[in-house]
Image (tube, rainbow, N blue to C red; front, side, top):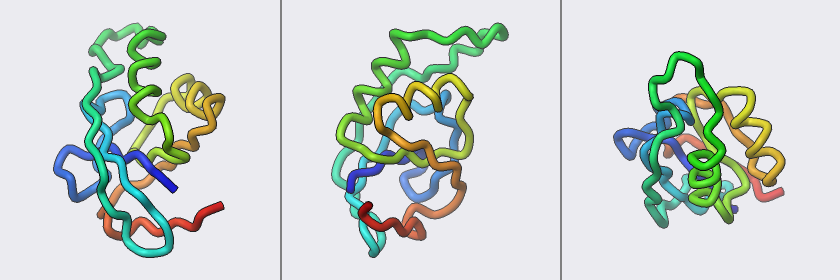
Length: 106
């Protein structure tokens, strides 16, 4: 199973989905995930206090996660969560080492 990771340092899941500038793509199973790609994106958050949902920015982020079944991040807004779930990508709230992520293929 492929998973997306929101990480600023490549070692930990440590950022909000909306602030992500890249997704690290991993192949995951019962062992520690193995990195396979880095996909850069423009962050969803533009520091606009109104928190307007930008469909074009979201579509770009969703395309970067194509092929992934899950995305790990420290936080995610309700609308992005719903839109990812519509695309079959399950957001997982997690903060900690990427190496500690254990998944099973469903």
